Structures are given as structure tokens and as C-alpha cells.
Amino acid sequence: MSPAVLGHHAGAAGALHPVPDGAGKDLRVGSGRPRTKPDSLAADKGYSNGPCYESLRRRGIRHTIPEKPDSQAARLRKGSSGGRPSGFDEERYKKRKTVERAINRLKQSQAVARRYDERGYLFLGTVTAASLAIWLRS
Image (tube, rainbow, N blue to C red; front, side):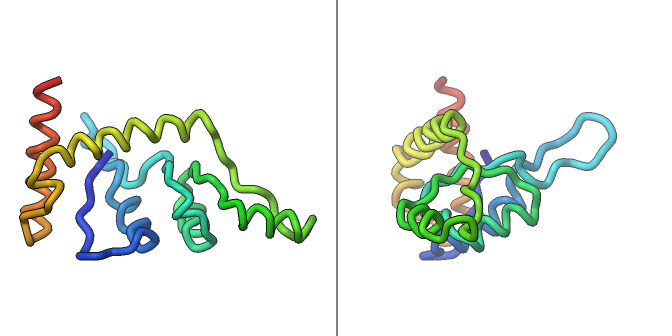
């Protein structure tokens, strides 16, 4: 998991594009380029739309995003021309809860929850310090 700081009141759909570019970076021991994209992405129904799916496919990122009921009904209503359902792995989606719990633990820190820092790099430092405190306690 890698944090990304977005602008004030950034919508969820717009947040999909910058996060996968910076997520998954790791330092390699030895030669070779560092990874610059995640292996997979688990998201909620808010990301279940065409532009998000296209962006992930273009980058070659596997995804686990549940399909909205109205989208599923529209696809089934179209029949064979409605396309195939998006791949959804229930077991992988259940693991998404771990990330949600980690975010909730971060928000127990008042500075993270209320976002006292006005500048992005300061807030990223606050999130990193809160993450470090959680890691040291566990």
C-alpha cells in the first residue's frame, strides 16, 4: 500500500489515475528497474465504470471491482451484445478489508483524521509518521 495525496475535494474517479502510476514502487536489491505499477487493484463499486476499466486494462493492471446492479442489469438486457462481465474474485475482494482497517487505524491519529496540514508534502509526512507509530506498536 502506498499513500498518495490528492488535491482538496478530489473525486474518487479522478483519484484512480494518479494512484496506480505511483503505487507499487519498490527498491530492488541489485540491478533492474524498480516496479512502477501494482500487480492488482481492489476497489469498491464507485470505480465500476468504463473509463476506470479502460485505464486499468491499458496499463495491464488486474482488478477486482464489483459490478453495480444497474450496470449488470443493463448488460444482461442487451444480451450477447452487452459484453462479458468484468472479472470479479470474491476471495481477493475480501482481503480489501485489511486495507480498510489500516486506513481506519491511521485515522485514529487526530492529525491524519482532521488533516491539519495544508500542504500535501506535510500531510504525507504526517501519514508516514502515523504509519510508523502503528508499525512500532504492533
